[in-house]
Figure 1 (cartoon, rainbow, N blue to C red):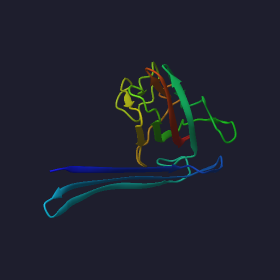
Figure 2: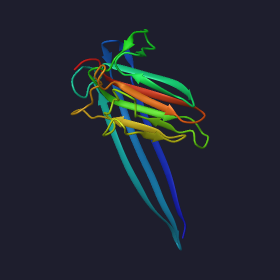
Figure 3: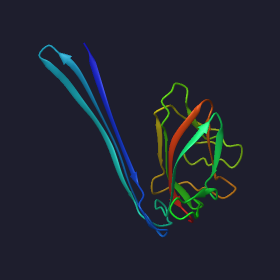
Figure 4: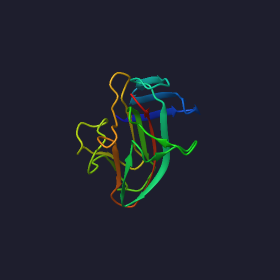
Length: 189
């Protein structure tokens, strides 16, 4: 008996910015796994399908967004700590992007292909943003070619309080790692 597994993962997050007052996003996550097994007179197949579609409206109440920041970054055997309440700069107009009202979406993709080129997300020395984990010391490891998607939902997103819980540490323990990051959330609550 042979087992063939084929995986297709699609993810699209768009955040068109028309003006600073309007930010919307469509988030589609689609996972399809086909499991097949050759039998005497044919091939048996099972399709496992899971998907979720979210439309995020512009605004400053729970589940809405009015700020977005994205970048492609590189770390060479070092770490950086992103200040979610003051150090991020808009590519659109150069203004400061602040998520004081809450973070709704975080997407981080490790584009590295070499063995051991992991990204570690979390564990800042102080004021760690913990919305996506349970504790300030928790770390999510993203292996080469892997990605992390965190969506808070529209009932209980996570506050990135200025000077309280606004640091997002990203670490490359060895080698140069290029990664893509997108954060969407609210400027105020």
